[in-house]
Image (cartoon, rainbow, N blue to C red; front, side, top):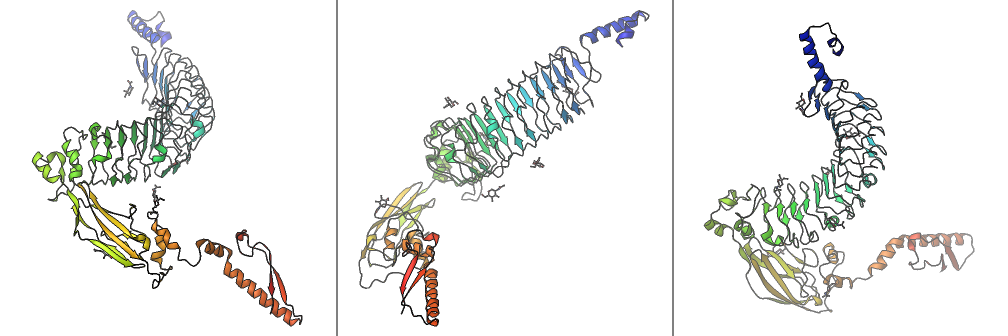
Length: 606
Ligand SMILES: *[C@@H]1O[C@H](CO)[C@@H](O)[C@H](O)[C@H]1NC(C)=O
Ligand SMILES: *[C@@H]1O[C@H](CO)[C@@H](O)[C@H](O)[C@H]1NC(C)=O
Ligand SMILES: *[C@@H]1O[C@H](CO)[C@@H](O)[C@H](O)[C@H]1NC(C)=O
Ligand SMILES: *[C@@H]1O[C@H](CO)[C@@H](O)[C@H](O)[C@H]1NC(C)=O
Ligand SMILES: *[C@@H]1O[C@H](CO)[C@@H](O)[C@H](O)[C@H]1NC(C)=O
Ligand SMILES: *[C@@H]1O[C@H](CO)[C@@H](O)[C@H](O)[C@H]1NC(C)=O
Ligand SMILES: *[C@@H]1O[C@H](CO)[C@@H](O)[C@H](O)[C@H]1NC(C)=O
């Protein structure tokens, strides 16, 4: 087209026309099918069914969009000459092969997108020459491995998206050279372990997202030398159940997300050292409680999200010491209440998501009610579940006059306050009652004369109905026991006295093979349990040693041996009066068994 136009035989009109065209083409030749914009130096060849990279691209083009075509391969020096190119978009093609040095010459390229293609492997050297690249997207391919030195020359790369590949392995030196990389995304790969060594090359990394990995334990020292890392996101690891306690050691992060995993408890031990943490999100894990005083070392924590978990309880003091805490998002759990005492200073709380929980509206939630216009519920009002009239009501529906009648508690009180003072003989069973009343239902604690609480198991135990039972009373059990009933509105207590008389004459030791009594040595909550062991005929150590030795079987085999020898010597007519029996001691006997120090018995024959 260029040549015929310069022939002098054509008419003036045509000449003018062609001159016009050629002048335009000379400045900004635009490949057929593409849209070129000279003002922005942009060539847009998106979705044009191209099977090869078009020719005739102008060397001053800054941006080239080849997305959504049918490109299959990129050859060596494919874009050579486009020295001014800054952005290249190759996403949505069917590229399965990129030759080494394909991008050679693109020394100003800053953004390269090869997302959504069919790459299986990236030969070392493909990215050579891309020393100005800032952002590389190779997500949604079928890449299986990253080989050593794949990204070597990209010293300025800030952002690498390698998600949605079939990655099974990242070689130890794959990320060598990525000294400026700040953000790495390895979503949805088939890795079965954290490529700790490869990551440790990334000394500028500040954000790491690892989504959809099939790993069930986060091992100790999983992240090393990531000194600049501030944000770690572990998302959708459906089998992740445990974080080893040193798994996050060496990290100094401000934001941590571990969501949509299978954690059944908050990994307190692994979080403890993260004193700069500001944002913590453990949403969509089957976590049932936030325990008291366990997050206290996260001094700078401001936001805690645990949405869609299985939270039944946030214990008082759960957020104690967290003076900067201002956002709690516990939407969609199974909480019946949230007490003010969970927080360090409830006045600092700004945003509270408590919706989609089966809340019981009583005095424990009065603090929320009182602050309902000051607190930001993020557009989701908390709701009283099935209140007295059987309907759910949003907090904002309560009038001032009403909520002072609804959000109430009845202080815990003890019913039937009768004097309980008993004197019994040793070995007797005794019960002390403690019937309580209050709203919400008070909890009952029984304290021993030494002020230690009893549990529901043990020789001395507390029944569900509040009754304290002392079985086989011992002289040492003598003293004053205290029952404490408590709920959000207050406490009440009552004491009971027990005197146990020693009666050694008619005291029959209990049957120690009674199962219910054997378990009494289990609970560590009381010291009284240790006193039981004294009436045992043997001490536990003897029994253990005897059992290990196979004491009985050993004895019986010696006896059989002896009888056999006796008969044998009889039949020979040579009557011996002693017999020496050699035996090999069992290894498990160690040095402790009786007679075990010699390998031989001498016995007298009859
Ligand atoms: C490039 O062209 C495609 C379709 O031809 C269009 O959808 C897209 O918006 C264009 N991009 C730019 C940056 O102009
Ligand atoms: C990766 O995992 C997906 C499913 O999780 C599976 O379909 C695919 O075949 C795996 N790829 C490799 C290479 O194992
Ligand atoms: C999650 O953990 C529970 C037990 O804690 C287990 O039964 C379940 O199979 C786990 N889920 C997955 C996807 O591993
Ligand atoms: C941890 O990070 C914070 C900022 O996020 C920084 O001020 C602090 O010095 C860092 N601590 C260490 C030990 O690197
Ligand atoms: C609370 O969590 C939900 C679910 O993750 C989210 O949509 C919402 O934005 C969060 N609210 C706040 C205030 O962060
Ligand atoms: C409480 O329960 C225990 C064991 O179930 C029972 O022995 C006792 O009689 C009960 N006491 C009262 C007052 O109901
Ligand atoms: C029970 O054990 C604790 C801790 O070992 C001890 O402090 C306490 O004095 C003991 N009480 C009695 C009655 O021995």
